[in-house]
Length: 398
Image (tube, rainbow, N blue to C red):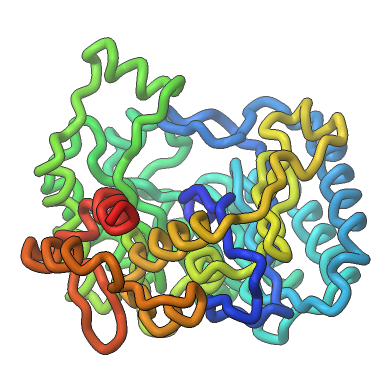
């Protein structure tokens, strides 16, 4: 859930000398999608396929072939971050992860401090797997905990228990991992504020370096959506959702986790560098089924089904951003972060001050307590982050 949980197939524009992101142009991030899982969660609409163990080998061979085809285009690039997402990458034989990293290193050099993240679920980890991941250079684990309440985990269709989350963190520490993320979810059907507080406190007690806290989004076509439509699951109202988000901000801040993006909190220096590439509009190459990319100003994606991916189709829906697209994306991504929109960089990139023509909208949003402009940045307040999409629309339409 942590990576590409936000639709990042929009990306930075093809004017590198004016771009405002913080990642050097020679750097590149790699995303590998592993679309296999033990069972489908009730809320999941990601490209993940249970019961397809017999196709693991064929899939990774196709993935390695796709990687090899990028060898020439990646000349002169250095890999800054790598992220294995899914699905459940820790479900497949560990050797597939090691071979993928070895092949990636063969086509482009890795930065000495490259961040290499592996997403996984408690209940799919073993000491042997974790030791192998460390040998191959994986230095960050992102675990899909979601909740520390067994009843809520069962209602979500998760395959693990609350106790297994703690066991997974303990095994990871013993294997030498010192950079761990836990994904947590709130606004779940039937979830009380007390249950949410207990989950936050349990995550903090484990001492992980990073916490991603997401509000449940009920996606069409999922079992959760069917339950809601039949009246079998009641979702909290907006006020309750915002209260849970505010509780996470306050509770995690007291525990030393700084909020650096709407849904992400980290101990100092432990922000997810891979996701920062997305938010700062750097180049990233997504490989595998359903992966999205932005390379050299062009964005594109791969087929979302295994059958489509096995057919050899690649680089679907390729397009370059228009200046209007670039403006909207820059504003949308920057205002997801607590750093905010760099006003000087905006003017350098787009040739005019951000404030020009938006004076009335900025005054209205500031008066309403949704934004603040300070030290050369436009930032959303806590209240503004609760309605970020609406703020962006108002500013773009001004």
